[in-house]
Length: 488
Ligand SMILES: C[S@@+](CC[C@H](N)C(=O)[O-])C[C@H]1O[C@@H](n2cnc3c(N)ncnc32)[C@H](O)[C@@H]1O
Image (tube, rainbow, N blue to C red; front, side, top):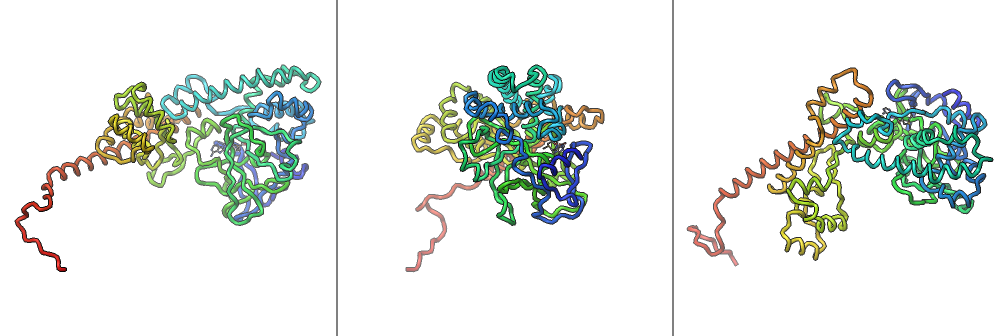
């Protein structure tokens, strides 16, 4: 850390060393702590934009030639930034970013690097679906490596020395994981935008939070770390490695500092008062544990306000695929294709998300009702362009219960099994992380199931009362009582 800080200040970075210090946490790597009480809106450190590492700041794209760079599509996705990082690392101590690159991790706890046995522990969880995507992501990255990066490397032996040492697939994945867990989306400043032609850009769909800071409009807030979701090119955003800002950890609901834009620098600024000794937390977006594990290789475990004595992540969610909602009603994909296509056209999703509040999602209720409509009513709904209202009745509640019960059987173990397994103190870190993800998801499913069962019991009791209640008399029917005539 000393070498990085020396390098940082040598290159124009500023840090309030009386307020912020960096320490090693046994379970979270490096992180920042407050050395004294810090008020809100205090600048902890500033990173000059030229110290960011990106396609914009690395000399590599210009060296290759910007036209070539774009012709080889190096400005799309992360391939360009990864190649810049590989090239800078290959320069060793001659790289402007040497002390920073030397300080970055080379191993990761993300499932991308897990054994098949450990991956099996994730069966049934949302991450197992995510992981299928991740595998595709990994395959895409490998395709990029072989089809875009290697040919470029091989075509310029004058620039890329010792290609078999420095430009390997393994190093490519390491740089990709560093970007996944540490990069920021950075908007270009106005000056850069005026000079757009001179710039290359990285296409990225990483989250950008453009809220303004609470007490000043001098700075503009940047988003937290995130992940590229598609390959669309967006010239106004540059995926960047931001030294020092990427050394802050994050925990659900704990953010007390954030990165803000200034014209020539990015500033890490406190967003709340921080007491001496407290950790200084950035935010990664209060993600569910499955997503935290996939991107960052850790999970959040906090005391839960609504479940005293229990630990978990209130950001957790469980996903239920629409095909499970179909099969739970003994319907086939074929029979329901037209309705599902229409549902998607109407903005519905093919995945329903249960959240920590365990409320039955209105989207699930509407989807169930849509699938149960008689053909003429479905035709009417299409004609009127109206998805059924999310009205919960006995019939729908029974389907919700079946859906939840079936979703729970997708895990090889029960919640009780998992809670017992968790007591084993000799668990490997990957197995423990997988258990935490499973337990969080199953708690939501079990809680939602209990709520749905209670609602069904209440609905049954209400329908009983209704059927026992005397029938309302029709107008004009003999009442046996005198009816007062209204005064005129
Ligand atoms: C942006 S970096 C933060 C700095 C990092 N701890 C380091 O040593 O440089 C993100 C990584 O920090 C770790 N991390 C962040 N927050 C954490 C937390 N609440 N618990 C455990 N690990 C955490 C994870 O390994 C994650 O991939």
